[in-house]
Length: 412
Ligand code: HAM
Image 1 (cartoon, rainbow, N blue to C red):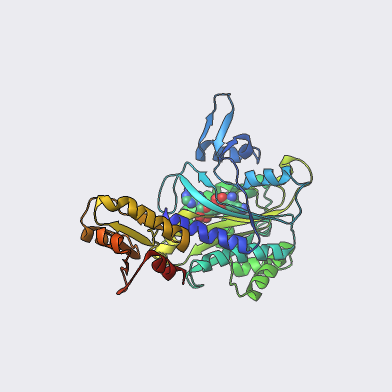
Image 2 (cartoon, helix red, strand yellow):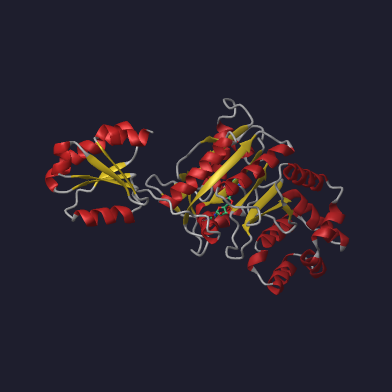
């Protein structure tokens, strides 16, 4: 929990420093919320979610992601909200996946989304926020890589490559190609080409698998989505943020329509994306009214922790109290509690009393092991003379005086 709280803290502080406001929702959703995005997603709902029938015969799902929920919330309150809306949340999500490094069946995910802004600088901002979060954990830019692409550009590129081979692909084929591209890293080159050939003619499959980024750039340089992507890359560069255009990045969810991005650890130890997101122009539309453009990302606690451990960025966070009061004998326990109250009220520090029956030496070494900073022994003599010794456990210093004097030590 100490590590998780630290991660959540950096997440929320950074999101708030960009003006994002926190929201939350119920973990339980009607299953239709995920099915409505198109028949293809039913597979995801049926195979990758915890879905069951409740006592009222309703089919419900433990949320596997936050984006449909937040899109519904924003669409439902569109008249009361002043756009652009900047929201963040740290929900726990449930996915029925095989547990493995970087993947669990329950994880916590920071979601940052902006609604009602179509200007390219919104894309710049959201990626800059993702970058700031990772930097605020103490990472440097050589430890991770931001990959960006555009969903529409990916679709147009696939069409164009096919047409260069004299073939026409329909929407359904393009969706399948995209879904396969999303799994490229998990397949061998042979398997990938093989599966591609099952969706499109062999010659198209060959060039889809072989086309390089340079070739894509040449083919697509006049397409608006390509120019938009270049503009975003330049905008980020002007903020000192380096990104890498990746024509193979497609993102699995069907709802993305524009910019898409992922962040990867480059150490080679963690091959799962730490973060993924993009622009979705019509997700709010399914809840009625005019569509409101959204852009955002999700970042998981499991992958975050793996990244921090790999790069030695997790300092031992201690949740131990600052001061441990140590009664020499059970008859001093209540007196020790009174003294603890005075420190809590007047010095504003975390204080606990060791009411165990261990010997004083053992109590002190226990406190030291727990990373408690100070100890104060309460025995018969101390109480009688109203003179106590505040001892720092990790630096060699002590201070003696009455409680008021010792409380002042913390205030100063
Ligand atoms: P996603 O790519 O499915 O996107 O997940 C985003 C991040 O959540 C991943 O990069 C990873 O860090 C973490 N994650 C996902 N599944 C698991 C799992 N089973 N165990 C541990 N961590 C996991 C989305 O969910 C989009 N809804 C994000 C988004 C928000 N797009 C726009 N706004």
